[in-house]
Amino acid sequence: MTAKNMKKKILARKVSVNLAGERLLKTQRILRDISFELNEGDRLALIGPNGAGKSTLLQTIAGVLNPSQGEISVHGHISALFHISVGQRRELTGRKNIILKNLLLGHTYEEIMSRLDDMIDFADIGDYIDRPMETYSQGMALRVAFAAATAFPPDILLMDEWLGVGDAAFRVKCQNRMNELVEHSGIIVLATHHQKLAQEACNLGLYIQNGQVVEYGEIEHCWSRYNEDAANGSFDRS
Image 1 (cartoon, one colour):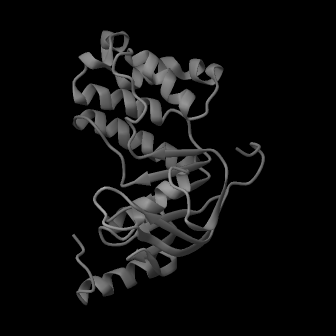
Image 2 (cartoon, one colour; image 1 turned 180 degrees about the vertical axis):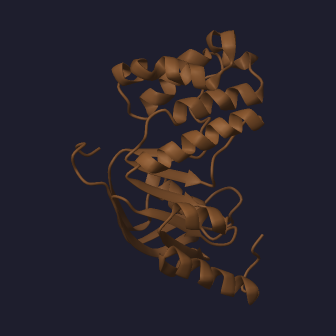
């Protein structure tokens, strides 16, 4: 992690990622020679059809996956808003899970305690906050996870689609919280299929297909190229 006064930055140089697993007969290259540079204030939309490699790229930026070739350097504290329930301990209370989640995100105990009441109020699950999470409904568990994961504006915000959970009233709270995070984050990388959202939230686009860069630059230009390929039947846009 860099010093707080250092400018936020993401730099990828010819990043390739190979993956192998039980469902793959052999190692497959998911990303190939991906290069881009983001500086403080940039908001990047990852564009492409299903299976293009957008989620793999997000996980590589987050440090969950390591490049097989090339390098990626990240300057700034990352908050990855995908799989937000990862790290939850069902035998622990919601309160303790909020503390644990933020410790895993790299925040100090003092920072967490200074905002703990706000996170609990945001989750709004009443006395259940001090009961084991194994007694929660799925909706309650997601409320706690969202409250914990979005309490601190990060230097770099990574999202796999726009995040919102719960009933209609809670989704409004989520929308307002997400807007605050976008406003105060240094850099944003958003993987999305939604053109209107991407053009409203982002200034840059990275259009990838079959793990390779097709277009990189202004968001409108990247979406235009993406729409052209979709209209020509170059891929399944679903």
